[in-house]
Image (cartoon, rainbow, N blue to C red; front, top):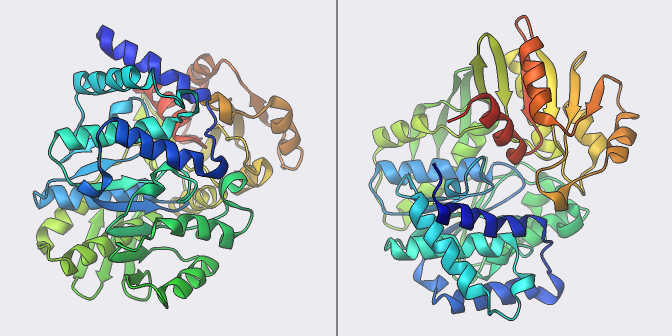
Length: 438
């Protein structure tokens, strides 16, 4: 039974789901700094590994955290979005924040913000960052693995000075905020690189993004580590059980690393995490090869190509939410030969809906599109119908009563086929909670 304070905390946070962050003249950064001052949080008290990018941020963060936990390095992990519970975002040494502590911090935030002059301009990410830093501060944690929200400069966290800046794979995403070209997007995201940054992990294949970062490297004092230049991997095997690969950097030579996470893209994410470990080694940290292997194999992240079965019906849950991630998901579905009969998805506003659908086009599948859980990111039924006119199937529906529809699909699915749920981690977590309650 959820306690009263927890319900109050959830009710308070719900108001931020419909707010649009005001980034005019850097107001979101001003507000972030003022909030930290209000709560007596000094960001310079923390050593930050700050992660931005279009794809793979969360997985990379979890891989890093698992390795640090295995070696008993005290640290905090902040990620987002959550699947079912806000507490999933705030982890200290591998342990999620307790419900009572979470509730107390949220209600403290509510009380202090009630008199703040920009209270109505405070966004969802502002509040998440305050909760995270208060939690880590009170746990005596100074090393934080921090997953950015949208972009670099576009994110409130751009007031941070990370010791290690990580840029994962880059693609066109959130173009309404970051820009309509790869160069505009990487310019925004690369703003996490500060004067105090010691190492920059450039973990993408995108040529335009790499070229821009190479220009920065030429005059930046930080050491830049590029994927497929300063660290490399070799995939040996990939199937429904995960992947096996080799990894090499200056101080690491690891063979036959096993991942339980499905999809070859996770090898790139794990390699980026290992590049961070390479940076830690150069900073004086010590790591054991066996423990690194064990840590990476143990990582399980719900709803990242997660396959579950219930009474003979198979489900594939994946939080892909941009065109590149959809293409990667489809590539892995084809590689593994998974027969998808139904696709349940939600697409956020300001996305190229038609190209998102084309990226996940599966012959003879039925598509069920549902509104986005965040109202500010919702798209209309008309937009969905227009997008499907460019698609080669009319076998789709726009559904508002998702819970009943999910149960109906589940009860009527027969044979060796999969139901794919994708497009938004919020949606994926919601559907999973209906079918596989805690």
